[in-house]
Length: 102
Image 1 (cartoon, rainbow, N blue to C red):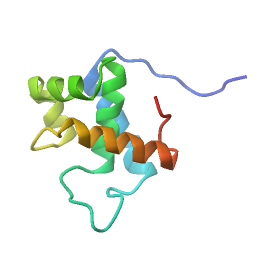
Image 2: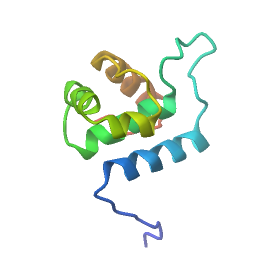
Image 3: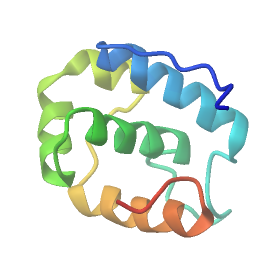
Image 4: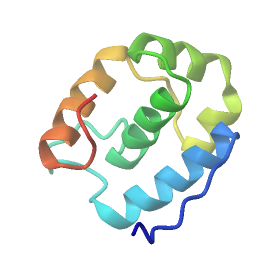
């Protein structure tokens, strides 16, 4: 029997906030001490969660982030990542087992 508590939301801001919270508890902010430090792993994971929420691809979520400043502010990003940043983050996080490779 599945005893996990499932919360549903239709708010992308609430979803991103929860993804950030869970990621900050589960993984370090940066994958390496030599990381560029433009985005934390927490922020990248939250963006990947939003990508699934909106059922879009890497380019689509980048455009949505560009159009939705509320999400940018909540994620704490000063600039929108290039779509390849999300692609490489997804590969890296899937390899570490942080998410299922979709």
